[in-house]
Image 1 (cartoon, rainbow, N blue to C red):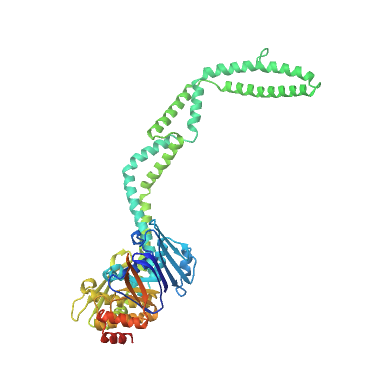
Image 2 (cartoon, rainbow, N blue to C red):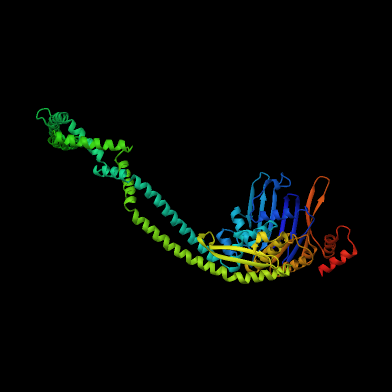
Length: 550
């Protein structure tokens, strides 16, 4: 429950601090006194977006802080999931800075608005006059039925299965599009693929072929130069090897005289060994050099084929051509394996549809089972609220398709008067009747969902007299089980509160300020008397006010 609220520098509010109790709390005030401002501040605590224009003094930041006792709300798992520090007395703070930026904190830990909004759903339900219109909204109608039926886990399971089902359908649609496109291009892709496969391309092939092509194209030059190299190395009189061998013999004779001569001998020995190896390899290369016009022509044709393929596919090398070949294989494979892939996906969709239907039927049964009791309870409450002849009808029909919240279509109808026809609830009820129906629904929901705090913003719109008294009784009973805060203009409702706050404006020489105070018993009598008879309070109004409080 909300135990304390502090608002600083927000709209017409300079600085207010109030402490709230359990049970049924009343807030009254003249029209325009600032009740909507207070609700706006509470909305910021629940994750609503901030408006820089709501700062009273733009030279200072606006700060709104709420203390919540959450010891009995079982929110430890939620706090852990949101990576927040759990405290039984949790403090939420919103700040709107002079720069226009907004910050939010939970127990002094910075949080994003999404996280704050999710937490707010566990703390407070603010029912505004505008929300009464949501009775005609199909999503809200489903929400009411599912809350009473306790269908949260089934609904979550359905939505999970529905997502999987839609994913499969999307994959099938994409596959059909791909296959349609692939079929159009199949012959051309197959031709390109065969052309690449026939080329028998391999990594490094182009470099090897180009090297061999250069060798065969320069046989005479190779033979001439390799022979000259071999002669220079091995010629008996002037060859390099022969000269080195003579030098080795000379150095061998003096190698024992000093260590540096021995080093000369070892080094020339190493050179002779290296040149011997080189000579042998040159001789071997010379033996292999021979003219081969047929091989040269074949290599030239192979290289021209590679060059043409590279140009055709805008590929820089063999690696790029091989990647293109793989892509073509995949495209051709899609067409060739189309029937198998389609059949496999379609079978998966049928299987998923069966699972989805099973969950949808459970959801349908869960909803259907609670509708009679809900209608009976709602009609009893409406009878207490001055609508004794009101009849509610709720139809739950199986939809032809899977919808976002099940395979159900839900229709709420109302016959407000005896013998009247059933019409859609938003068309059958007046503003005052809608308020009473909403209160009945909220009363039933409150008992089901165990909402910590509920705030009614003028739920009494369009009612008066004995009906207001009955409405006050329902609000009071709700307050016995939870924290209920009602903003009201009706003295019948105001008199039922366990505590009573008054919002009012106070003018100074420079500006107007909204303030709020908790009324003592005698102050409540005066406030109720004013609500009954205006500013000129008479003895009868005071007596009536005391009677309401008693």
